[in-house]
Length: 216
Image (cartoon, rainbow, N blue to C red; front, side, top):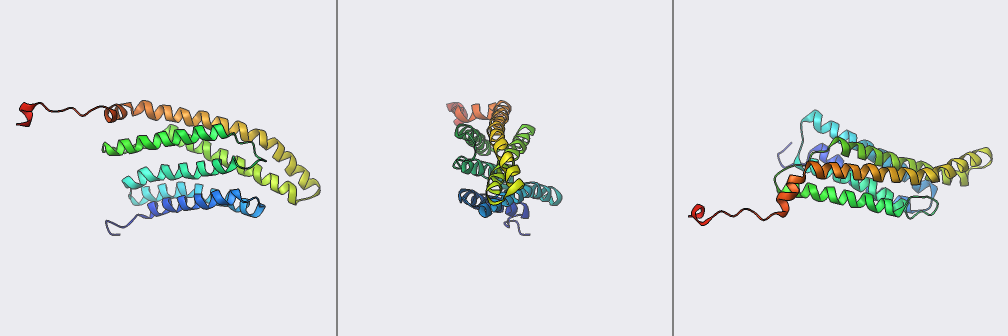
């Protein structure tokens, strides 16, 4: 591999961003086949998050690009799904919660850019990793509820009844799970800000100017 060639781990990371966009539009199409496809895309894309990290560790191909873009792509995957869910009236995903999640992600992404300008790479924290697991689990739950809704319509008899019950129960879990995700997400943001406050202070302060004697 040449020095300028993109690593395999980074290629997988970028492919996850493309999958997230396809998934977003598939969710918006009110057909069971497309939403089932979106579900499968999400599962596959979430799995690649583990795969690219494993490849980077196994091949020792860590790059600054991967350190910054990988968590950013995770945000695209989760936020695009949650944002699409708010447009589906059968679900009970609160818009305000999705807004707060997106706000947090933009804040931490901005912090990563500030750190990069300072010559630092903001590594993922345990809080951040836990946050990602909670968010992806929430999206997975909502996908399950959405699929139960469609299956309650296309099946008959006992199957339709069971899927209908699961859907009605799930609509309450949708809301609760999203609220829990908001709490964990903002807890993660507080941790990032607390641990990197000096980087922020340095970024908004004027640079210390040397006196005239030092400049001579």
